[in-house]
Image (cartoon, rainbow, N blue to C red; front, top):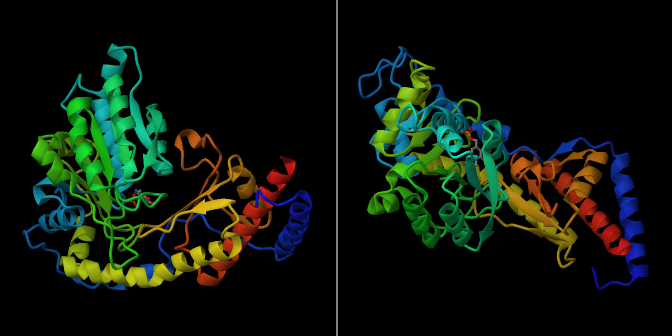
Length: 428
Ligand SMILES: Cc1ncc(COP(=O)(O)O)c(C=O)c1O
């Protein structure tokens, strides 16, 4: 498109402007922001209520109606271990949100202390008159960044390379600054880029606690552990095994949940680390709760009792959402293929398509779309502090809208991208 003459561009702008006004006249009310399961997906777990039916004793003898069981019931710890590639003794089972566990873990490390009073990140930072910092591969998950912002933890952007985050940059940062206390990672089908980390990245990640110190934590958010969109999912090496080999398990915190397996608002969540860490974290939690919702844990373990059941269930999710991803990509190709105005990912799993406009146009595209009734994730949302230094990234979430709405929204999005791009090219 950049090779076109000004009169060609002017003509194209006029066509796009007409189309854009035609969209406005439709009075649309569409939304491409919601990274959540559709109703059809939630209906796949309709059988979740049946297995309890008065049978309140878990296989390990726990009466799930009563108080207690901070670490979770045995079968649920085993479920989490299978899901996340851990041992059951390394897993704590929480409530309906892994994000809550991440928040609580950061609160524990930052304010309370990983090994008791005097060992908190904040105490260490005050002693050296510095600030606690986290590394954030970007673009990334906005709610991770919100946790850091909430605790006043400074965030440092790290770019992605081919096999995941740029490990050279990460190692250089942790060597240079002992107040870097953690890193956010979504190792499989990263939100939003879709990266699955390579074996080399996982191996280097396992060595990070050695150079970053004993209070450093890799926050390994495996939210999309089983959320494949292809028959041939990319492999992800097991970081806990790699850490075991290097004796760095204390530096690893793995999280995940069934939010996008069963019910996003009523699933169960997991936090895994070495058993000593898990025990200390559960003691921290004991000040705020006598125990989690074990009834929910039990119904999950009965609903999806084996790895095969889980895999078959995830295949049914795939049947619902894969056509939506495929259609979104087809439309982007039809509308924008070969025009050099947008790059987008073709994810093999997860919940998002990540797109990059020409530099400086993401906010303009989001505003143009909003003006004709299509809500897009705010520009900058995928970066710490909501600041995309190049104003390029826009995250698309195709799972929730019905197909017809999705198609319409993607066409409007494409029109806005091209219109903004033509205007920019004409302005020179
Ligand atoms: C990477 C990532 N982690 C965590 C979550 C939320 O997980 P939960 O529902 O278990 O709090 C999401 C939801 O979009 C996510 O994309």
